[in-house]
Structure formats: C-alpha cells, structure tokens
Amino acid sequence: MIKIIFDSETPIYLQLKNEIIKAIARGELEDGESLPSIRDLSVDIGVNLHTINKAYNLLKDEGYLIIDRRKGAIVNIKKNSKEEFIKSIDEDIEVFVSSCICKGVSKNEINKIISDKYDFIKK
Image (cartoon, one colour):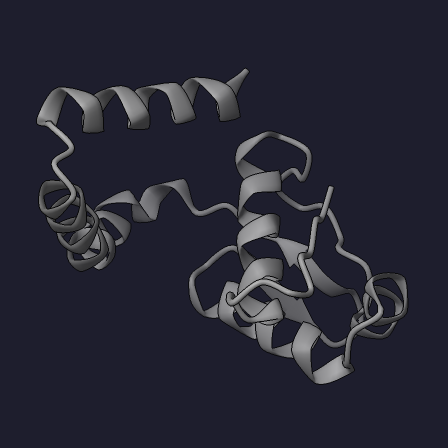
C-alpha cells in the first residue's frame, strides 16, 4: 500500500504522507481504521522514527488522522470540512495550472489529466 522511493527528491516524510492520503482515497484505508504504530512502520519501511512521526503529525494537522496515545494513529475522514480544504489548496492549484500553462498544456489537457487521475484512483 505504501511505496517509498528512497532516491527521490521528495522527502520520505512527504512521500509517506502522500501515500497514506492516496490509500484513503482508494478506499484501502477506511475511516476509523488504525495505522501501524510509528515504531512498527519505521521498522517495516526502514526509516527513522522521526520521519514517520513527522508524516503522521502532518496528516493529523490536515485532518486525515487522529492521534490517540492509547490507540495510536486512526484514519479520520472529515467530509464536512470540504470548503476549508478547497480554500487551503487554492494556492497549490494556482501553481499547478500556472506550471501547465508555462509548459504549453491546454485547459482541455489539464482537465483530461485530472479526470483520468480521478477515475484511476476511484476505480
């Protein structure tokens, strides 16, 4: 479920965070499901405890996880925070669309890329 590329330019904690978000979107992780402990995941993936902790804390801050001292990290999908989420990604989308325009990608191509990726994840 989690694929980490150790020689990637993307930091491992961000790769882990992104992989967990994708797993939630694909339905591989469900609301209320417990994730492995920081220590267990650290051993499984072969990375430092602090790396896992940083990813889990980012996911908590973004509303994807609840961290409970007794139960650990639990998937928490807040569908009622959609408006807040849309506001929070506005800058990222603006940069993405601007990058596409700079590279000559048309509006139709952008829409197709996003639509295809949505269909791939939701299959």
